[in-house]
Amino acid sequence: MPDTTTPVFDAVLARRSYSKVTSETPSTAEVERLLEAAATMPDHAGLAPWRVIELRGAARERLGAALAAAAEAAGADAGAAASQRTKPLRAELLLAVVASYRESPKAERWEQDAAAAGVAHVLTLLLDDAGWGAMWRTGPYTRTSEVAAVHGLTANEALLGWIYVGGRPDGIRRERHATVDLAERHIVLGE
Image 1: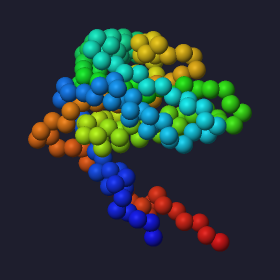
Image 2 (image 1 turned 120 degrees about the horizontal axis):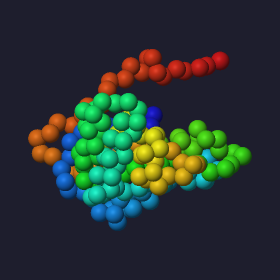
Image 3 (image 1 turned 90 degrees about the vertical axis):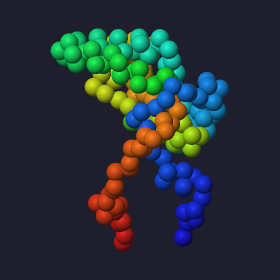
Image 4 (image 1 turned 45 degrees about the horizontal axis):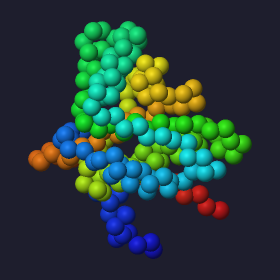
């Protein structure tokens, strides 16, 4: 029987998303330290098919303008478009996770998406374990040309979303994990 009392096991069970965070943020050096660990995620062919872009200060406002423009281009009414403008202001630090596709005879595009998503997931776990509040967010305009331009994405890249990061506010209840019925999701095939 595997040991289920390890610090890693406990950290995975304890991780929660924080939909609201304070203005305190980790430094770029702290983010880089966490990315060093997140970069050890499984990565078929060792392509490192991902990038993480820090958005702070006015970069968040430019992202909000791009989200509003994308909403308008999609036919959203003025109120809905305006609400997009403020979404990136919910945290002082957004970490944009980008799948950065590489040509490879071994690793298909979906595998590269999985590697980039793995980095994002482990990064949220590491942030939580380091005492930061974090939440991975996406939305209907994540993969629009307006939003891609703000991040400087190339034709071989796709935005997977943003990890909103900040301090953990006092008195705020953390989001709870949904209960999973393993009988529906864990299948054992035998002889």
